[in-house]
Image (cartoon, rainbow, N blue to C red; front, side, top):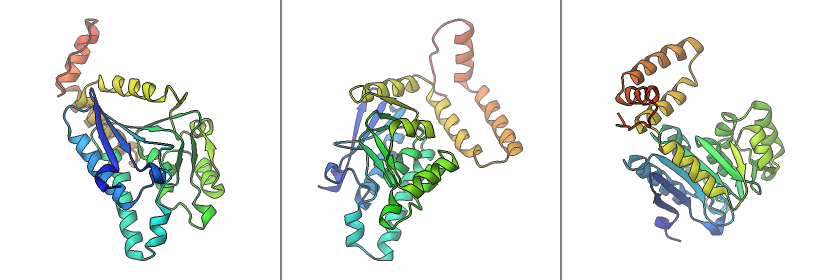
Length: 260
């Protein structure tokens, strides 16, 4: 498969659909796929007509993580370093994109595939989906996947997944906080699209500003976080869309966003 086909970008109204497209390897995160995914994510985020991104996988599952055959064929530090650098670029860019990113998960999301789900802003799965960080079973602790996973779910749940390396179902993943909700397989895409369209109905200025605020304040202490968010709130209140939103609410009408 040529690199250009490893990730597919489609549009549906104000939603960009990004599909991992290496079905033969369960959409494993090879160097080529990761590089293409990074480019496509940036392309979708830069599209002014897009308000929300959906990340999903074609075929039997979302993603089985890094491509172990590729790793087996390239057993040298320079390859390992390049692979993990490519992966880090994708995982970190997700929270830095201006638009919300929703993971639409089916089949399996394991190892770095589970990391990818955890790195998205929202995640939804069908009732048959399985999740795992199974590296410990083959002599490789999921060192890099644990970064996103441990920042999404509680410590005890994270360590349980990492130490046991066992598959967990969608219900358990929801209980852990790895995903937001679960839908029947035939309903998954339509339900995720409905969520994406609801988000897309909001002011793009407010979405971008709010997402940036959320991630920046996470690592601040309480006092610093309130100082930062106070300034952000004042900036938001002065924006055109805040004035429009308040006016629309008071006058019981739908807002007409200027996205500024």
